[in-house]
Length: 487
Image (cartoon, rainbow, N blue to C red):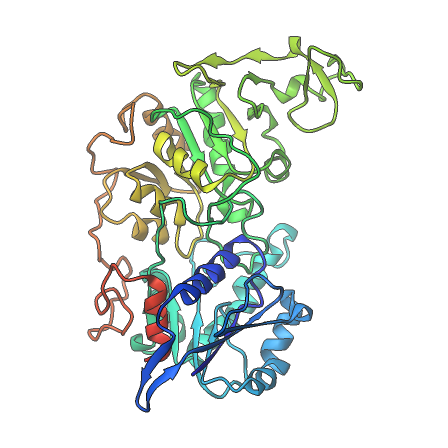
């Protein structure tokens, strides 16, 4: 049985992580044969990719199509030339992992839909605003192709119940055709992904933030949990909503509250590009000194030294200049000997290793202001580790955190709500200091129970094969995907 997998769109961490997870499952699986009505058949896989992101094996073939890269060329392939090419590979099953389905494919088909832009009801992006144009293309133009793919595919796989409900509502397909398979959550530090290195790549990539290898360790000595430390692992996409965090931090400082720090997985350049007026909040990377940007490169009185003389520190906004230590402020020394500046600021660490991210889940309050997600990996991972969470009041967050009593919710478009929750965390009113074991609480809204459907659209009485009710919850999500493909 030959299964052709199309994931040409995968090129950056989000979609690429999903591709590699699926590939590793196939590669390591002992199931090289599948039971069919004609008996056992050997599984043969053909992957269509834009580059050699995975290696071939005895039953896995990789075909690279770099000329199809980019959404315009990809659309031409999906609508015009791709069907003929794919059928030339003689597939028994065609599996698209990139949200859309190639026209002209005449075999059993399945599509993995993880692009939430066209399903969410929170934001209507505009083609006439430059900063929103790419998002609008995926919401309004490619979104129509995704709807068409769901209607034409034999099976559609989504990650969450809210996406399943929206897919059924918008396409009018039978609920039996749309399967929810929750992604695996690994908190063992075994994955090889990154957080902070342009996670999304393009808007068309999977929007999930993932974690993994990095260029260096930033976490430092092991530290206990503190409600004064906040953490947001995310890329720099517009809807990741860093501006909400910035506004909340500014409100805290206006109230005279400055004993906190916010750790981001953005570079300083990324942060200043999406929040250009928030430079005052940045803290120097090494954590030993805080250098308000108003004192560096923005005033005529600052002292520059191009030759890097002793006693001068590097500008935190990477201007290439050196600045006198008299322009810096000492940080606070902690009990474990490490120094961290808590002066009401933001630390941009760039990409982190998975080990570091898991460490921050334990010792920090996770902030998750994103208002568009298919499946929010950071809150799911933090929940799995018993972490403290302040999350946006959105369908994705509510589903991922359903029934979890260590999460509090805020309107992602009302920074004052996040400000109040952060203030309560700083003052020790929400979470206990010292460890990820937190104060028992029901959160600030009625907790949803695991398994509840949070949409007005209820699941069909007959559960689709591949749902959590028909397959053991402990089984790998990719085993469920394979079952859906080959049933």
